[in-house]
Length: 365
Image (cartoon, rainbow, N blue to C red):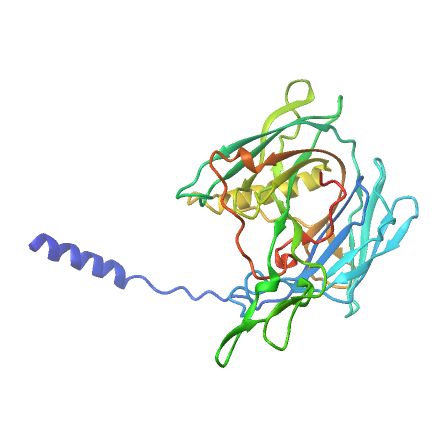
C-alpha cells in the first residue's frame, strides 16, 4: 500500500507540472484543387476543379466543392490550343475529336476562375512509353458464404520500358463490369400501404389501378461501371534487367454479385511520366499506404505544378501528360471457386453507380 501511495504521489506531482499548450491555428482559406491530364490515347480529356474544404465541415466527406464557370484552355508547345467545355459542375472536357497528346510535345493548361483569379500549369512533355506484356490475377478468399466480404482478385502485370531510356512509369488499372438494376421496382409509402413508383427511365409507369405498365425500353437498367486502382502503382525509377518489370501488383477487384454479374474486363495502362509527375504519384502512393500503418513516417508535402498568376494563393493537385499503352483481359464469373449468387435487386437506376455509363463501351466483347 505504501508503494502504491508513493507512485500516486509521484504521478500527481508530474501531472501537476504539465501546462496546456496554447496553439494558435491559422484561419482556414479555400484552395483551388486541380485534377487533370492528357495522354496519347484519344480524348476527350478531363480536368476537374474543386475547392478544398476545412476539416469538420458540415458537408459529407465524399462531397467535393466544385469550382464552376471557370475557363480552362489546354495548350501545346507549337501553338495549338483548345477551350474546354464544362460538362458537369467542376468537370471540364475537350471535344471528342479535339486536341490529342503526341509523344515529344509539351502541354499545359491556363485557368481563369469566375472571380478573376488566374493560374497556369508547368508544361509537361510526353515521354516515350514501353508496353504491358502480360496480366495475371489471383483469387483471394474472404469470409462468410456465397459472395463473401473480402473476396476478389489481385491483379499483377508485366511490362517493358523503352531501351536506353530512363523509365518513370505508372501502371494504372481500370476494371469494367456489366451490371443490371431494377428501377421499375421502386415503391413509395402512401396511406394504406406501398404503391409502385418506377423511375421514368425504367420504361414503366404506374396506371390508375396502381399497377406497373410497360411503355418503353429501360434506359437505366444495364450499365458498365468502372473501378480504378486505389493506390497508384509506381515502378522504380528505372526498370530492372533488360528494361523488364515482372509481377508488379496493380490493384484489387472485389468479387461481388454486381461486379461478377457477367464478367470483368481488366485493362492495365502503362503511362510514361516526367520525373516531377513520377515524384508526385510516388508521394501519393506512400501517403495512401501509410494510412493503415501506425508507424507511418511524416508525410512529405505534395508539390503541385500549378501556379497562381495574379495572387499568392497556393494550389493543390496536378495537371500532367503521359504516353500510354494498354493491354486488357477478361475474368469470367466462373473463375470464382464457388457458385455465384444472383445479382442483388437494386431498385435504382444503374447510372447511380459511381463511374458508370449506360452506353455500351466500344471495347466490350
